[in-house]
Image 1: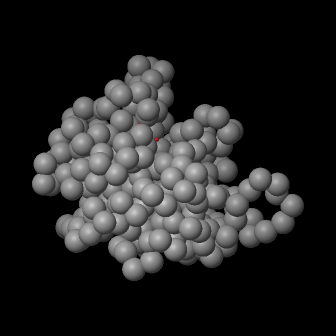
Image 2: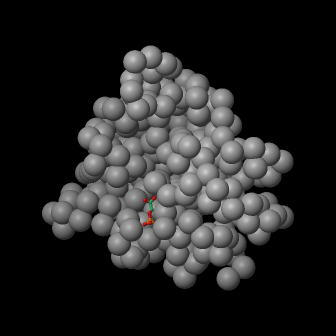
Length: 254
Ligand code: PGA
């Protein structure tokens, strides 16, 4: 089964509104005509609305970087799924390792967020991945397995198949310049797909897209995408410049 490659740019805490608009205008122009790859950008909350206006009529999707699971209320500093939908997001990133590491997110809180996103019709880029210590301790597979089981707990197969994209992001590769080799990444992607087959079905496992994330660049994207179970990338640093991000999206032309 053919899975359409999906490249998403996670801007993290970067770009003022002005800078975000500059970037997205250039991206729109540079990526015009790209149809064989799905593309999304995840600006910070403050830039979502203006970026959404700029993206009207383009095929680039918009993603939030996180959400809180309540619709509204006394939750100072949080953003609800309804708010993300209203400003034009189709996707939301959930469970990013920086959220888990610095902001106390757990498999359980990640799961609540995933449920809330789907309830309000937002597709989820669901992030999992082991730390360096876990990899060196030989527990990569069990960590990834736990994150998958707990993070997606309570979802039925059709929801998982149509609404979830898994992003495998080894924490030691994020922002470090140390990409996993294509073989290292493929080994875990294959494991994730087998696990999805066990948890749901062969159909779900075959159609769900699994992105790789962690120091993806125009130089290493081709080798990663050549692996059978790597269906795209979640790109941090290299998504902040039009030149590098568009080269990653156009990986087939390199
Ligand atoms: P990086 O970030 O590409 O800067 O390593 C990836 C991510 O955290 O999604």
